[in-house]
Length: 407
Image (tube, rainbow, N blue to C red; front, side):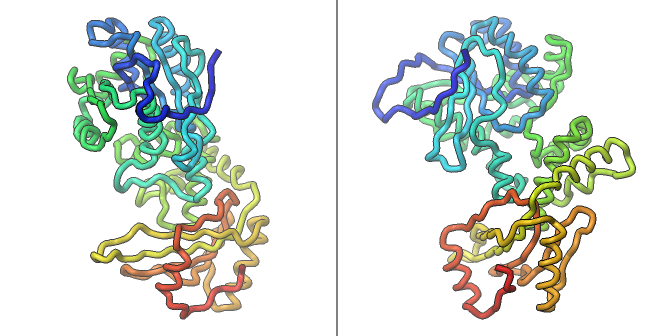
């Protein structure tokens, strides 16, 4: 029977019972699946002792349905046939102190656990944001890298081990970043697909030969990277195939853009503007989005601080989000409009989907600066304020401005 249990790493210095020297990261996509399928034709020939090897999967909670179906139809039977130890992990919560959970640990896995107690979607939705393209892939590090590292550190305890990563030969640069960023003691990273010269085309071709199906990319439904990976067209086709998922992601983006107009899912482009309402399949996605908006809405006060560090560089943006009221979209928009007009403030209205927004303090042109707005949005965003925000806010503004009396 599949097991699910909270996982607590052993105390430093204690030995473990796991006789493991190889960890294979499996992201469910074409690359890492092709490696598994090829390696399992001759494990010893590819330097793998299955008795001393584990395959790790870190559940993010928002995998595409077709990927889950393919994994359960083709990949899990392959793992069962060879008795591969397959461990499925998930993060327990937003804070690292909440730990991780082993969703399943079996040499005969029967199902893929798509999510655990916490998901990336939960985090994005609760704080009203979307994944960011700039910088490192923080979302992947939180939901995958950190989770796998915690399990490995607890089990390996610093003993030498190999970690096999399924980067393909088209993305060899990621290998260098992986080697530079890894902090796990005793780890040696290996990238067999790069060594074999297998790019994405070779991986997809091999899986087509093995299973007779096209194996798609594996990534979260709300991922921001399809546009930079050159696969936006295929991504939009996936959206059209799953209008319900499209509606959910559109709501996530719309909520984030209500709190921050710059929070477009694809940087300069929003997902919403990529749908054409004159096209039947696109219209189905937009109708699903409208159904997603049929929920309680909230009126939020949002403040941001853009401050400078001592050396003149930019500090991380600080934010405070406060829920002021709960109600229907039209009701909240009317309240915001009435109060704002009384104070001489313009209100931005989206009559099609319901949002109303008023800027009490628009963002300036250069750092340091502050902004403050009131906006309506689906009521999924929690109250959240960065540490020392009020102190920094008062110091920046020096108590010189009044507030719109909505609180």
